[in-house]
Length: 150
Image (cartoon, rainbow, N blue to C red):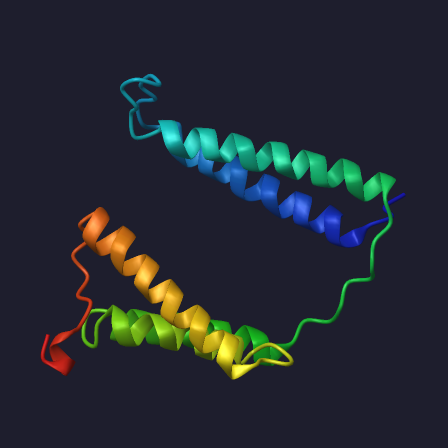
């Protein structure tokens, strides 16, 4: 008997994505830990997801949980809208506009959003992503896009 429905469904979702990553990665060479191939990271990450999914499934049969709340259309719509806005604005307006909008529009989908913490989160996440992805990894995404004179 399933006692924790959230853990049960979370476990199934983790396992689904974990096995999916492993299946998609099987057509590429694995390599070794020293010389990793294109399949190495997705396979390892997929295996970790499957393991976490199994633990979550086991927990769902042992430990009870809170009931699953209803799905809010507003939340789903705001997350989808924020993702589309990020995709449309990232190259044109730059990361400095697109990422804070992603955070703030997504937050509008939840209950009890507070502006100050969300603005701080948006600023910190923008700085972190600019340093890691653009400066560190060299991803060709403008920090300030051509719409803003960048």
